[in-house]
Image 1 (tube, rainbow, N blue to C red):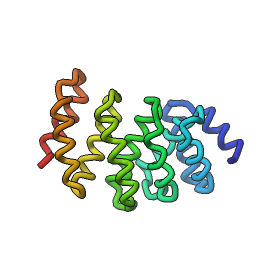
Image 2: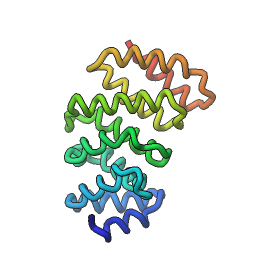
Image 3: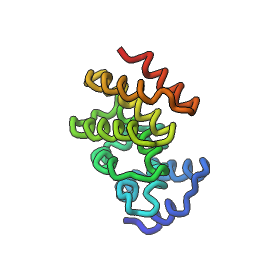
Length: 177
């Protein structure tokens, strides 16, 4: 683990400029990807969520860049417990599922499916729930049983008081077969 890189992530903030700078650094220095994964995929590390913020932006800019660490990320999914880590993880899951550049293994798909379903039936905030339901919707095209499960879960949660959540649920429900 490169100590300077660790310090760079540690000093990063939630401000978009800070996250963009760290993302650009990793994208231009791929040799730090393993260090990023070491931090991001170890929830006991106090800054793991900051590394996940960087991974999230990488997943949006160039999902295939994450190919070497997808397995590590998927294995860590069930261990994220704080909102600061769950939100970027949910978006990374969505990006991985929708990517045409990455082919997930059956095990990775299973890990994403289980985690996304767990997020939907627990009390996560709107953004991770929306990314989870969208990832599950896409995975349901390959695994039809997911669409049935998604219908059940979402039809029970539609009374959620937040407009953003209600919109996401209605959008997915109308697209389900």
